[in-house]
Length: 239
Image 1 (spheres, one colour):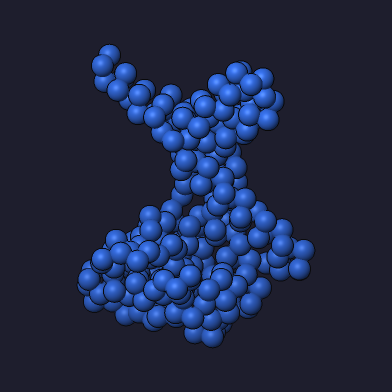
Image 2 (cartoon, rainbow, N blue to C red; image 1 turned 135 degrees about the horizontal axis):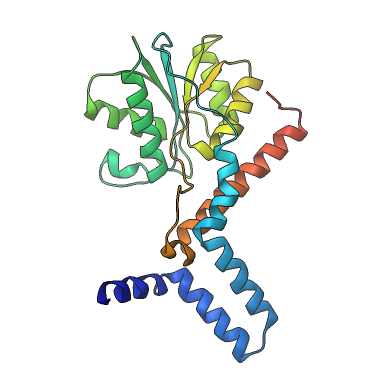
C-alpha cells in the first residue's frame, strides 16, 4: 500500500499534474471558465492515451521496409543535439535511438556505409559530427558525414547528391518518417523506410492517465509533422 501511495504522490507532484490541479482549483475558486478549459486541454494533451491517438497515425503511415543485405547505404537523420561533455550525452533521446537503429541495421548488411545527415542548429555542434564520434567509439564502420543541412528538405537534397539513384535505407523517428519519405522521393531518391524511436505505447496502466509533460511533447512533435505534411502537400510534394 505504501508503495502505491508513493507512486501516486510522484504522479501528482509532476509539474504538469500540479499545474492542472492548480487550474482546477482556480476555476472553482474564481469560477473561471478559461481556467477550467485550460486545465481540460492540458489534462487531455498530457495523458498517454490521448497523446498516442495523435502521434500513432503518423507512426503507422509508412510501413518499414524488409531488410535486404544487398542494399549498401544507410542514411540516418540526426535528431536533437546538445552541448554536453561527451558525444553520447550530447545526443538527445530520439537522436541516440536513431543512431542505434542505423548502426544495428548496418550490421545486417553487406559492405554497408552509414551516411549521417544533419548540420548545426542554434549554434550547437553539427549532429552528423556528433554521430560520427559516437560510431567511432563503437567500432570500425564506414561512414560519410553530411553536416551542412538544417532542415529535412536540405537533408534530402544533400543526400541525393551522395547516393544518386541507388536505393538506401532511411532511418529516422517513426513520427517523422512520412514527411521524410515524401521529401526524399520528391527529390528523386529511392529511400527504404526503416523507422525507429516509436513514441506510442502498446498498452496502458493507471499511471498513463496522469498528465505528464512528455506527452505534451508527443503532441507538439505530431502537430509539427502534420503541419509539415499539409504544407508540402499543398505545394505538390507527393510521393
